[in-house]
View 1 (tube, helix red, strand yellow):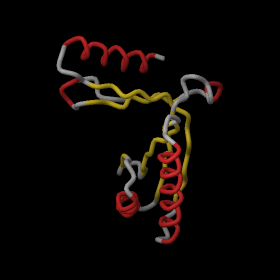
View 2 (spheres, one colour):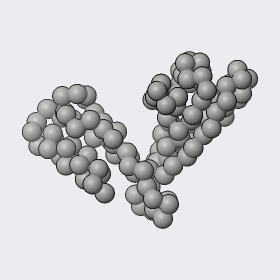
View 3 (tube, helix red, strand yellow):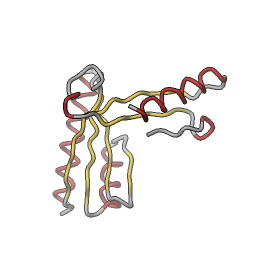
Length: 131
């Protein structure tokens, strides 16, 4: 879930986990990879060295990556290669991991300077929260 306060960040990627009956539906536009590891600091270093755009939750010991369905072939192949390299390097370092994939609906929302875009952002985020 993205931040509701527009002054907190310039933009938001809002994501909602979809139910199993919505997989491959029109709403399913991305896949969230939640990789639970037993050494989050080292796993984060590996992900950074590979060049992955990712988030880290130190408390839960997870790295999260998003694969977008709209990726070009080049971006798709790059993501898959990086993911393969990440799992290879985790194994090589003796880091135990589990990759859980979930279908999500993801939206990129710009915060904007004007009141109209601010309201649109809040409406979208609240709508996704209520769905």
